[in-house]
Image (cartoon, rainbow, N blue to C red):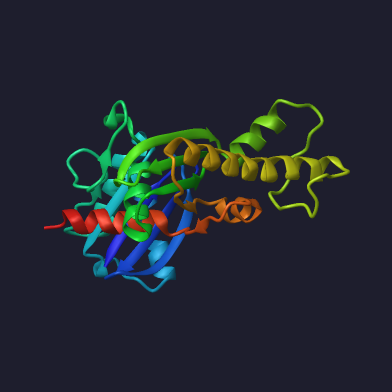
Length: 256
């Protein structure tokens, strides 16, 4: 079995594969104060909840955009699973992705994994929308090259900035109001955040395709994509297992 871990700024997604089948995925909170032992205990608990024993794990791969935690998580896996040295997405691993940006070394591991998964699952050209702490919208062109994209504040990041910098706006849940034009403060905030992000996604995709000169397949992933994407007018495939699928592809390309 393969233990796959995607470490984001807000959440860490943990998944286990049995051959090509995903047995489960779970999210835990990212906490840079936790030790390798604490993360090992959390991983063990998550696996046991789903009936997976550490001794059944034969390989592991980690994607991380939180450098202070990367080594800690790697050591946590080593504590939990004997004789398994986790791969870490980065320099030295074969991804099969042709990256055409100013400095490929600055590209986040999450964008690499998303792109590998999108090409493998949906082909090219494609646009990937990943909605996490930041919302990234990136492009794989018709020749299967990663050519760049945009980064904007994520849904919760935008909401937190709005609430923190105003005196009278309350914290609200991220649920869609029935109407676009709202008549109370809470619904106005919900509509602005959710429908505003949906309109942003639609608008950027439209502009990307105008610049490319051809249409694309669009796939979305990330914790809040299931809230935002249904409000988009563009046809978008929702695939919340995209990161896990990409990690599996990269692991398979690099295992001996």
